[in-house]
Length: 196
Image (cartoon, rainbow, N blue to C red; front, side, top):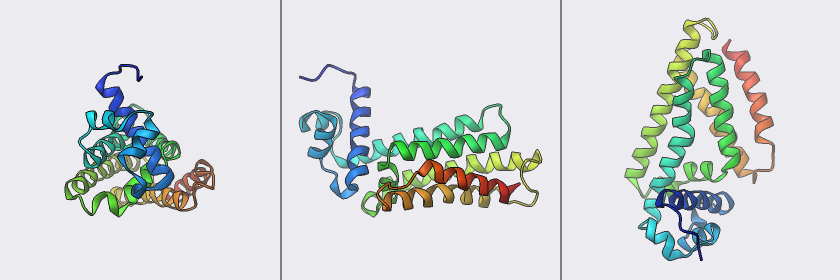
């Protein structure tokens, strides 16, 4: 019998179990039965907390938004220098991807957003906010002389995200067979070389 836990904790467990299933088999492998098996609970317990996969997808979008974009906004609002903030955001994002390979599989899957325009809008809004956050940090870096004059904050933010997303895509397509953190170290060094 499952220990009695709060609804919030149960939902978090279900979201993490969902990411585990997606991380191993992609979005198409996702069934309520697979989530229940991964979470170590009954299908009925999953349905007690979520009405179905669409609700779980929205909870995943919230989890990703908090884990990646929300964390970036918190770092951006801190007192560190802009370049240090960018570095922390970059490696934090890579660390989350390395911990949850289901995140890029979910984000890159047509199964996730083609059939669900509301989910696509939510994800697009989160990504747009992330780009704005990064653009602000980059603009501050330019103003403070840490980054090259003449850089476009928005396009540099998109380049920054592209480094992460393309690396995550390559990593998941290759079955997580290379050291994503080691690859990230090389990319960060190259980014600094280009942007300073």
